[in-house]
Amino acid sequence: MTGERVERRLAAVLAADVAGYSRLMGRDEERTLVQLKALRKTLLDPTIAGHRGRIVKTTGDGMLVEFASAVDAARCAVEVQRGMAGQNADLAQDIRIEFRIGIHVGDIIIDDNDIFGDGVNIAARLEGIAEPGGVCISDDAQRQIRGKVDIAFDDMGLQTLKNIAEPMRAWRCRIDANSSSPAMSTKGRDGPASRAPRQTLDRRAAVPEHVRRSGAGVFRRRHGRGHHHGAVALQVAVRNRP
View 1 (cartoon, rainbow, N blue to C red):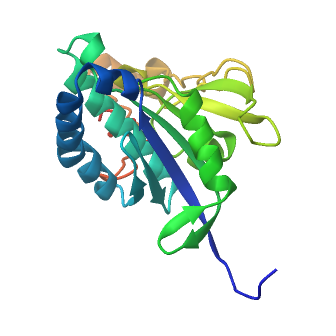
View 2 (cartoon, one colour):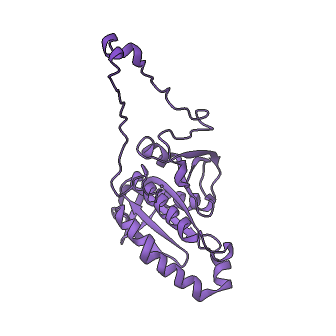
View 3 (spheres, rainbow, N blue to C red):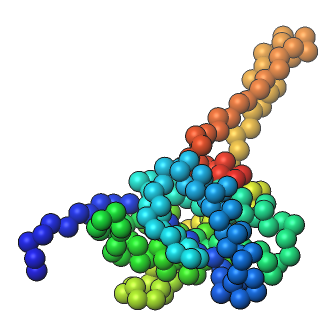
């Protein structure tokens, strides 16, 4: 061992790649490259910056991004995927560019602005089991964002990831904008998700007799809803982007 000190920190790591990249390049290299450059300029880079992410590196078909917050990472991922779904809506399936995204929270090593370690490896392996257009997150990441985002999750159970010693529980984010809900699906871990029973107001009991007879008395119940600011709102307006 050397005496050199290694810089470490805890971070949320997002790994993304293009599903079917080789097929797209084989079909039309120039079109694919032009599309990817346009997507980075108009969607990916602005969304990542808006959620305070740092692009660590890019490859021909993917990128590695670091976030200080798992909530920011998740909201960013959902916003990107929802944006991609909108852009692909009118395109033929065989020419669509679709990203797969994996997110993990873990300890990373920093060296010359690059990042290494299990935190990076696990994010990359989660991206590998995500569906095209989907987001897959680790159990560690899901615990960090649980109750802080307006996105539904499906429990994928224990997953055996390549070159990762132990099976890891993974979760699938529901990208459909209509799937966001105050109650997250925990099916597989705690049984089907259930919402807290709605409290009902017995208006006749709550309103005095003389008021009821006069026909007056309108009661409104207002329920506060969490807000997200423009970033990892995986309370996600991003998915409404998410």
